[in-house]
Length: 254
Image (cartoon, rainbow, N blue to C red; front, side, top):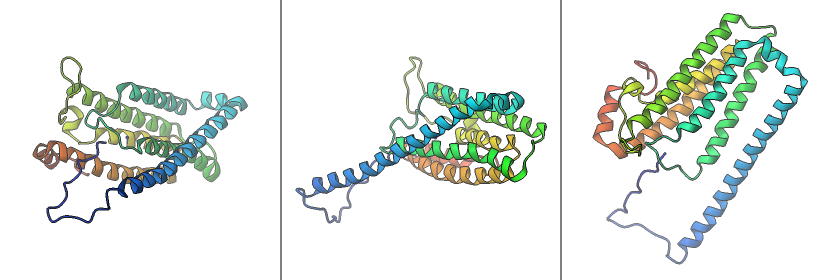
């Protein structure tokens, strides 16, 4: 992982608008339906995460610590990933998008579910399709890619806050174009994609690796379009010029 663009003014030719007395009731009814669906989705997501955590606790009690001791690259990956998640919380939200949409919490829950599926699918593929242990160098490569992705994602987030803050530490709305942002417009997304792609490499799981790339690129494409619409509305020609001279995610490719 936005500010909703300003609403457009009504056309001068006029529009058909519901009577004033009926509009609030219709809006309230729509909010109730949306709220119910959103709350149900959030509760379902939280239950899935809780059940997954319980299963993880049971696995820990059954001796999974022996597995982590024998697979040090996987252990190192998970330790680094957990550290990144906490560090990301400490850095805070993207200063370019100080407000979140109403369904931001539900979106985060859905993202966590996708990540949990990824973390389960890679060892599942290795265990039930191939068996045996992957080569050590593959695990080492996965760990190196993860560390590079963490450095890129977290470093870019820190740069955003550093360059968009004044001397007193208060956030100011600026278009950051230096540091990692000199080479790609969305280095945070690029770093996260590297981190997620590195996980199936730890298990030498090519099917999950390919699916991870496809899903991550699809999600990144949709998120980049939404982010850049917001940035274009905020910074106008400055952002358009920045977009013309930089790549979105992968230098010289995308």
